[in-house]
Image 1 (cartoon, rainbow, N blue to C red):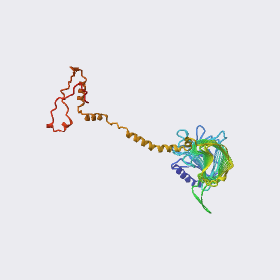
Image 2 (spheres, rainbow, N blue to C red):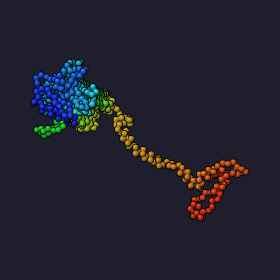
Image 3 (cartoon, rainbow, N blue to C red):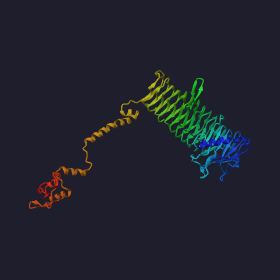
Image 4 (cartoon, rainbow, N blue to C red):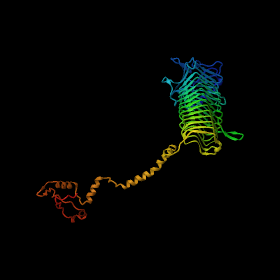
Length: 562
């Protein structure tokens, strides 16, 4: 809802530029006022925004914008080192943004050591705004130019890419231009977001601790250059290139991100008509070259879809899979990469990848070196695999026209080259591979088989459970059951043992039996107690029952009957 409200506000403001000749403050419903900057020869400054009622100077020398700023066509806004720190008011009552519609903006600090700070500012608590649920300040160009140099931008953006922090976006066929250099984008939603653009350059920029990707390059972005950029500790991917053509990521460092290091997603959202029918929209010609990618949560470099991507001379370490090519990727080249310490696989191709060339890669200390699964027309040549623990190269599923040649394979596992589960692989295309450094394991013991197939242990337990239950049930049946009420068992003994005496009477008998003998016979003080009736007497009519005379007790020297 906040993003939709922002789109409506901006479209409403666009219509006013045709009649404006000077900066104007316009009240808008549901948001902070907007300062419109129409076309003029001289660039606008922070002072012009303040004079128009859109901000003020703080006592510590910083400039606080309390209103939105919209730069119109043929107008330019320049915020430089004279400002020192630019704060954009942000809180529950609204948030101030800076945007350009086919205009230009420049944010320039004094030097890489003395940066201009731009921050979303909580005016109530006098600190950077960390709450995004009520919206937050952002900077965006729409079909215009945005240049950011020597800037530290933080606590910006909410929800989507175009309101995600600092964004270059297009406007009705007009691409955005510009770029960033020697800057830091941190604690934003996206570090930097690019779409609908042409030739954006990010040089020596640090993207860190952002909520989503450090860098998001989205559709209709062409010719984006990323060089010397560091993407670290972002909660999504380090860099995401999504349906954008001609992107180049070079000599950058991508480390310790929660998702993938670098993702190239070329899967199309729809189809377009061609002379031969229809085809899926995909990106083309993405270059990932000479980057250091380490310690990311899932994959180091992931190529999903796309045409003619090149992954070259990268150093990848500490991921589940170093480099993965899958889901419609076509014509991908993976060359001269160094992949180290992948917990699962150094390089994986497939499912659903075509025409992949893996040449001159060095893979060390990964569980498996190269895995090709349900991918056709592959070339594996002059790769070096050392320290593999299962297979150096394994081919599975449909793998027609796959060639495995001139590779050097070393490690300790089941097989250096495993094509037992491969379909369509011609054994004549597997030749000239060096496996002298490979030590094959023979499953002499049962535990080696379990190590290779750990799921069998779980299934074995599941199969044994019914047998254990059956054995326990039979054992329980053989055990004599205990009486649930022990007191009733004593009563049962009395009913079936020939005595019906009440407990008090029985106690008197026991006491008498324990008295010392007088004249050879024990005294019996309870001989006057009437005897108990027998069960048969209770069944007789009352008038026929015999009289209850004194009980005829046994001699005292006899064993009492209980």
